[in-house]
Length: 229
Image (cartoon, rainbow, N blue to C red; front, side, top):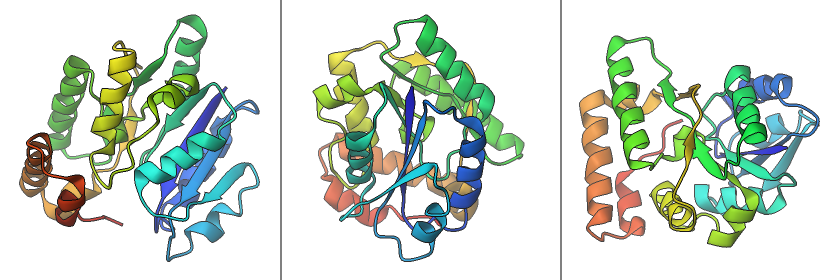
C-alpha cells in the first residue's frame, strides 16, 4: 500500500531504532526502502540486519538524488518520504492509511512535533504547522506523501543540494494544488536547534530561504548549511 523511503548518510546512531519501530508498524503490503548516500560509518551494515528493509546504495550523496532512487524502486501506489531523524508512530501511520482508503487523496503531509520537551518548542511547532497549513507548503521533515503516478509525472525531486523540498512541493501544487494534512503528528528532530540555538538556527534557515527566493543558486547556499549527526 505505502512505500516508506528514507535517505541516509552517516546515521548509524539512530537508524537501528527507527527501523525497529517501522518493522513493528508496517503491514505486509507496505514497503521500507533505505537509500544510503555513501555513508562512512556503519549505517549500511546496520540496515542489512533487517531483511524486511530494501537497501539501495546511491552512487551519489544528496537527499533529492537518494529519494528519487528510492521512489524509482518503490512498488506501491503511494510513497512516503521520511528523513532519517523523523519518527512516525502507529497511530499516525494508520490514520494515513484510513484517509487514503476513505478519500481520494493525491498528496499531503503530517504536522510535526519536535523532539524536545522544552515549552519553546511547542510554540515553534504551532508556528511551523500553521505556516504549512496556510501556505500548503510543507517542508521535507513533515513526512510528505504522494501518489507515485503524480511523483513520476512531475519528475520527482529536483536534484539540487538544498531546497529540494520547497521546489518539489511547488511541482506538486502546479499539477495538483490540493494537499491534505493528516491530523496526527510525526516527530521531527530538534537536534539542529539544540546544537546551534534557536535564534541562530532560525536566522540561518530564513536567510537561506530568502536568498534562494531571490535567485541565489542551491550550490552556493549549501556551503552555509551544515549537516548535523
